[in-house]
Length: 140
Image (cartoon, rainbow, N blue to C red; front, side):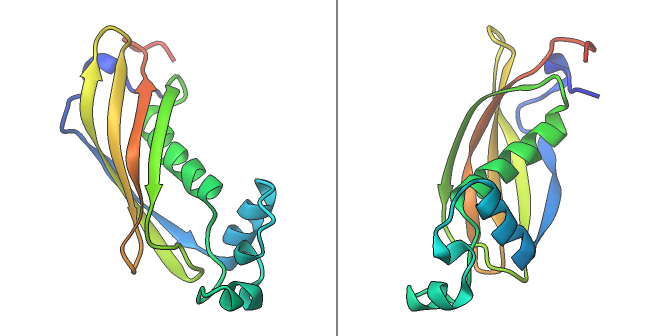
């Protein structure tokens, strides 16, 4: 079920989402997004380049932000804009916890801006904003 624009309030908190960061997920999503940089799939080469292990690529982080917001917004939501910034790497064996809150609404386009953050044991991995357009009422 999709969220209706009229029912969303500025300040509303999105439910927390914990994402286990497995080695398989990090490697598979890098390869699925055609990111063949060795730091995303080869632990020894990642270490040679100064990393403690392989780490998640930005395309996967972007996709997880999209998933987090659209899971909350529902299938009728249309993502209009995603703007993210990366911080601490996502390493295998950790968990990233996604949180978010509605920061603005624009009646002219039924758009909602959501501030998002994904934090792991080291600190914030991803921070940013997502703008989605929502249906007015209960269609979708």
